[in-house]
Image 1 (cartoon, rainbow, N blue to C red):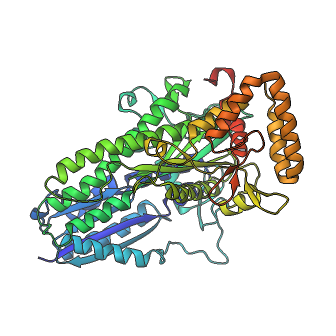
Image 2 (spheres, rainbow, N blue to C red; image 1 turned 180 degrees about the vertical axis):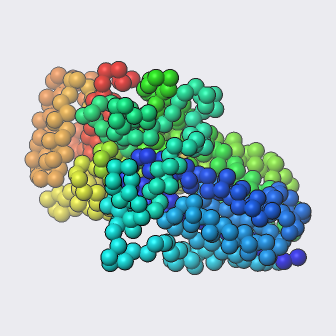
Image 3 (cartoon, rainbow, N blue to C red; image 1 turned 90 degrees about the horizontal axis):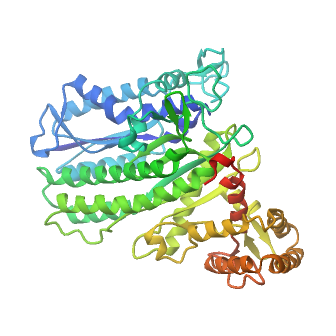
Length: 554
């Protein structure tokens, strides 16, 4: 029997969601993406008379199986080439109508086994990633464009603003019920009136529930992009273990679909735990509803994207990463017992970890650019975590940055121009330690720990210390390292006289963060050059609850 595999992958999902910068359209776009490989795909299968099965031995002209199906990606397996071609033809047409402007790639491949067909399909996808699909209508020199996206304008909104073809569908979808809400909200709260906001600046008489900021003067948010570590280890180990084995029957499907489901369930459980612990206690009452201080955008596989009120973002990220590690340990243990019984797969980790990038910005700043920076921070976090592996696993943790200007640079530029200074000898020094470790694996690694940075922030937030002194030290690091050392010595002497015990606690915490001689220097030995946590502390003090309204403080 010839085996057929049809692979589909939505691309640049975050850019599609964040294109206009309007929260209502982001909400609608995230709902369209979340439903794409769920209800939308079900509708396409029904139109073709196809039924989904979980048994590869039962595949015929009226059945199709999925080894992966979530978050804008699916792998469909079939024994009937004509039916698979019809699925491809209808599906690609459906995507362009349901989510116009979304980038996607697909591939149809054959093989003697389903494993061979899927491998061939992935090879085709890799070739086509540099060949994005065309979108209609094409822009011409004389065509009006939507001011928010630069795409060809096709209609006017209620306020008369021209918008592109995707904007109207996104806006309409924002009013529909959301499966994404249930992915983030704990099940026991589904019927309790908790909602995520749809507007950043709603009208006073609007039925939309606006974002619950701390106040009009503190309209700051954070964009969080989190991604799991270690999936490649598992997929490579499975590929080697299953090479050459007969995959007819339930084994192949149970292994791969079971793994995909296990990771998806672990991510949902981790997101729900973070929402329950961090966001739910800070919900604001509005009529009979409780508006949560966040807006989920994407949750697919091991990926998570969410906009969170600035003062809550790092707590949410910490809880999610810790919970992801615990939830994947439980999910993988169950998957191994059910799907891998009797199969020797060497090299499988007992859990996965996650890294994240967190960008703090104003609610009026361009979310697409801020998200691009969050994605770059997550990538940099993964790279830094790779230098501190525990066995084969990267430790979990996150990188964060606060945008303090109207222009959003890329991460390499920020690191070189804003967060790097030179001493008298021209040697570079960093004003951030970069990645902070979170979770059990990170506790075994030689990484700066997030809990130690929190402790250092608490010390510097003390009423007995001047925040201005820390900001002055950071400024002098840029301007004059010599004057900075003199100012640091005077600051220490003043603190020793007024709060000697607190100074000893600060020194102990700095030592935990790698600063070997805090009496003389604020820098630790970093991967590529000396680095200090002082810049990170200043960021935390700027976005922490220390500046929140009294009712919002812990």
